[in-house]
Image (tube, rainbow, N blue to C red; front, side, top):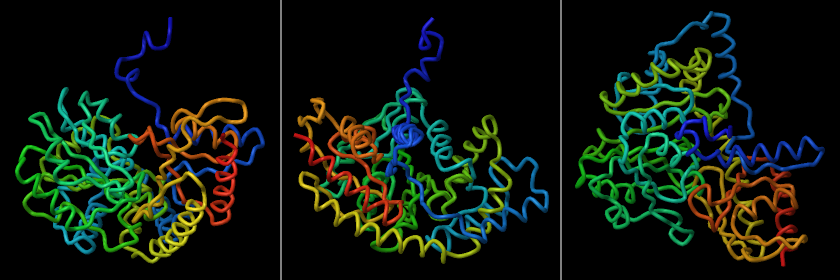
Length: 401
């Protein structure tokens, strides 16, 4: 009996996470003694701030080790409400906050509580790899709006309007964006909000997990526009800003009805997330942004470093991302070329594998993000590793003929 014959259609229709796949392949090479530099994973290379770790230790000593409320401790939800008010100018009540096991679960909860089979979800490309697969799990249909490097990977109101149909239920995007680093300005978001005003049955999922890694101005949320706020679901968390990826702590801010639905969904899957992580999250939000700003300064320096090095590679086209810690360079000029063994590079997946096997640098193919002409590079790595990785990439690409 084949594996696919007894597994559910749901799991058989699901793709493996491309970022996790490349990370796995890189680790397999490293286990063979090969020095692999990973630029594939979206994870800050900084340690969790000391005051956050101390809060977790205190939580253990104070025996915060029991089941937690499904939507999160009231103290954490209050800290999130205060953060949204003080940093974003947004008014929420703790009844509108649901804390989950990472922003990924938050996204999944929202999609599963809103989408019926056949409902359409509009997603600008490139998009984070899991967006479309979550729609698959909910039996919805993804409708993509394509962007490119010339538009800084941002959609226009006209493109949005053209993608809307009577079946549209959700618009889902991230700003700052993974994988492109693009950031929507207030005026750009306002123009999109005016489109949504004409379509009152569409919900907007605003993934703001990279909020604090923004190099152009203060973060702008589409939830600031009162005409659509009740239909906006903010998804955020602690992993990127506070280097807390392993703590698995994310949340949504939404209308009371949507928050209650997510509470209900989570109550039948994971229940409340880790008690220790939640106590650490309170300390993160109450302890200020000093550590966040120091990390942001390092990312700003690395961004310029990688931008300069990418521009030195013939055949690679890039822009300067405005946020997050990724580059999404255009690499289609290498399609049709052959490696040293005579294998033809047909797409971004072939090129990513070639760079891994030949240059020993792990990247992620652009096709997984919805555009096959690009690859994603994370610059959440040391300056030394970034310089060496870009040297290897340049050298490997030069060998293609």
